[in-house]
Image 1 (spheres, helix red, strand yellow):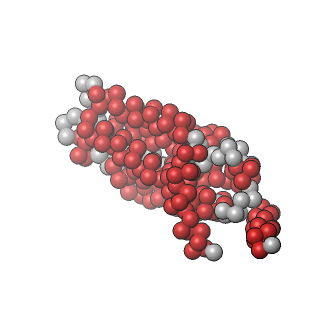
Image 2 (cartoon, rainbow, N blue to C red):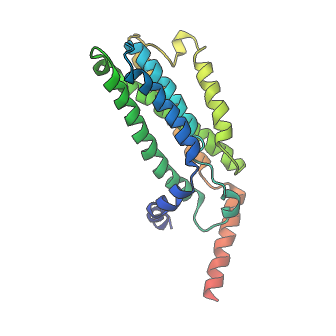
Length: 232
């Protein structure tokens, strides 16, 4: 059954992509892209720290939009469909991750192209990408947990939680800092914390994507009913 479910995932990409609420993500991602595009298109000279700051703001915008991509208006009506919940979530992840990756690559390309005096070549793009991935992972994890209990809108909870996380990160003591300047001696250690946060977010998302016990029982009964109906 697992092998069958895994093979089903690619077939769900197109219908899932059509059903996803893209407008919120596109609006947030567009704002993030504009934040780095406007300075890149003007004669303003920014330092590496300034550009990293803009990338971080863009990453927060993108993460806020990603949190809404798990929303499914039809969630209540498909609670007992034969396709398991983990498969449906895997299909959504298979659409969300490439879309977010393409958007982030465009953000980085615009930032580097618009940097003055060769600063773009010195930007710590890898570290900032880890930050962006962790923020997006947290948004998806919070949305998945919300949708596990209430199939309405995970983005409505991810939005304030993510903003709260960013604000709280600004207040952390130096030994626990998450946002540091690119030339800070703690840059590498800080991004180890970001990597841990990303791993935790992925683990929470994986757990939240599993079928709740009661719902799984209903799905199993539904499947047995369909099998019995076909045999008869």
